Every structure is written in structure tokens, then in C-alpha cells.
Image 1 (cartoon, rainbow over the protein chains, first blue to last red):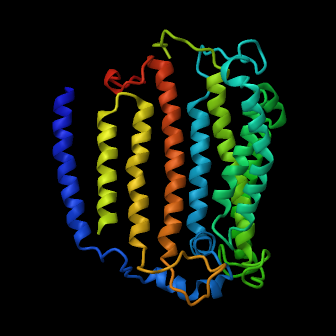
Image 2: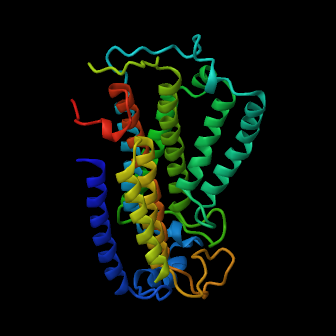
Length: 257
Length: 112
């Protein structure tokens, strides 16, 4: 299809879609008039039931803990998929980490960039742990805390040398950490089955709301998820860096595959 | 009403970007723009006039708060968006290696 024809077709389709969406929106309760009932129920009973002061985390890791398990496995499966898509292709040449040619560009940043990157590592680790372990109290949680943790390790790589990075955090260790996080969260769910009545039932003493050690299994879930997220994103970045730094570019465009 | 219209607006512009894209990387970013409409819609649906954020760490437990369920869903949404984008970027990378181009118009047919 020619480009102008495609635009006309899209324009007609987009106008129809927008019109239907606007029609649907007109019948929604007005902005600011939340109709309930689920949010209202959790607002009334959420804190006293879970002893978590952050109701968003209470929803994610208690009311909808089962769905969060699915969400976690989406991340797990996606990283696995990326590793498969970016696998070594037939006839593709890869440099060894540290070999000549991996020293240019991205690999050896300017001294200033390297310093800033390395200086950020400590604060990012602290920030990540802080966000993850306070997830049941204040905004945050495993997903939000895992990203700074993964970024901290990756910044250390970017600020240093790519070859050194592979030694500090070998692929296998990162994979192990990710898998341990994913399995840890599933185990928290199984604990509910073993020590209470149902999968993901909160089976640990809920303590006093607002304390660091409260809300039962929610902080444990957050720590497991943080580990999984940090590992998953680190793996993802390593896969992409390998492509950029280690795979020998082939300008001709390999038609054979 | 306005936030819902903003969501429709963002969605349509994201779709326009996807259709008009001349680079697969740009296309993935436009998909992200289109998906951002769902964040606006979710957070907009859960809003109550005059209510606080659903965090009881420093407010009394009788304060009205907005719906935490849609906020939790927005978090799920963000995670899914990140994984979809990463997977698509990996595919774009392989496309570049295999066909030597990332312009969708030049990728006439998919070859196995």
C-alpha cells in the first residue's frame, strides 16, 4: 500500500476510534466521582486487614498477590525471550570480552563520566534497598526498588570496563539471582498454602502498622520481587550491551541467515 | 471528563506515530506513547475529588483516599510496557542485522 493511501486509511480509522472512545467516555462517571466499590472497600478495611500503610502495595502483594505472580513471570519470560532472540546467529562473529576492539566508544567512557557513574553506585544501592524494604509503608516496593538496584550494578559496568563487569557479575550469577527472586516470591505464596489456608494467604504475624517489620509476608514478597526485577533488567542490559560491544558488525546485511 | 479525553488524544497520537514511523526504534517508542494513554485513563478513573494518595503512613486512617486498585494496575501496566518494549527492541536489532534496514517500508515481506 502506498504511503498516502495508508495515511488516509489510518485517518479514517483513527477518527472512528476516537469517536467511539469519546462516546464511551461520556457515559463514564464524571472525573473525580469514583463509583467504587473495590477501592472503597480497600480504603475502609485495607489497612486494618493487612497492616500495610501503603494500600497500593497491599493490593499488589496481598489482595492481588496471585496476579503479581503472573506479572513477575511475564518479566521472567520476556527476558528469556530476549535472550533467545539475541542468541548467537549462524556465522556471527563475537569478540571475547576484553579483546581489542571492545575498548572503543561505549566501553571506555570519559574519566568524568566514569567517576560520576561509580559515585552513583553506592547511593543507588541504598536507594533501591530503601524503596524495596519500605514498600509496605510508603510509596515503593519490589518493582520500584529492583530497578535502582539493577541500575547500580549496570552503572558500575558503564563507568568501568565491560570486561571487568563480566568478572564482577558473571552471567550465571545474575541469572541465579533473578531465578532466586522469582522462585522466592512463589515460595511466599506456597507458605500461605502450608502455614495458613490458601495460596498467598498472609501467614506471618502482621505486627504494628507503620513499623518496618509489619504487614506479614508483604515485605518478604517485596524483597524477592526486588531481587527478581534487578536480575531481570541486568540480564536484559547485558544482552543488549553484548550486541553493541561484542558482536562484530556486518554492514552488508546478511540475507542468508 | 478532560483527563479521559487526554487519554484518547495520547492514544491517537501514539497510533499516528506507529503508522507514520520510518524506523523500528521510533515505532517502539510510539507504542510506548500509545500505552501511556492507559496510565492516564487508569489513574483518572480512580480519582476522587479532594481525596489523598492511598498511603496512610502520615495521614489519619479516616482521610478519604483515591482508589489504590487502579494505581496497582498502572504499576502492572508499566512493567508489561517495559518488557514489551525490550522484546520489540531485541527483534528490531535482529531485523537490522538480518535485512540491513529498520525502515518498515523497506521490509516488504517477512522471510523465515
